[in-house]
Length: 207
Image 1 (tube, helix red, strand yellow):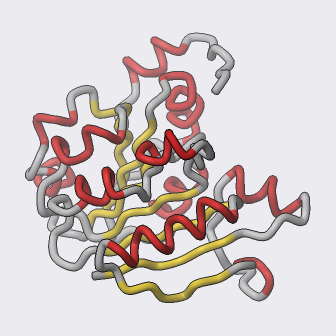
Image 2: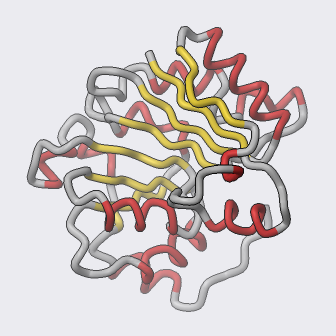
């Protein structure tokens, strides 16, 4: 992935009240940081933040955390967050560390337009692979709930099989999410793909 550099990136990252510099120290204690016991929903690979920010604005009684690996992408997200928002934090980290940052406290996980890693030898890097599903096992507070959207049909089919093999029950499976539903909060990628007439695949996996 080639990323454009962002002007004043370090200044943006260092000055934002929403960026958690050392997320590992809050493992098991995120509700204390938020100052309440509301459910915590996380999005891995939040991109420029449209989805997670709009959710935080709409659902004040839920705490949201956006996770993104790349500095430049995080720097594009942070200035978009209204300073009055109190139920949103951003973490800059590799998702491989997710089980070291959360423990028995997450209510829902969003996987939106994740990198499909199309080569077979890279399939363990997919966020719906067994490698990651094992990491997710102990991050959830109670029921395990994964909401996934993608434009990549091969990744979608792979994920359905992966979730099912790992004991998840699948519901709300859609091969064209926007065909009938126009009330969705979308991502930047999602808006782009919809304008191009591409179908969006989605599923809810629970156990």
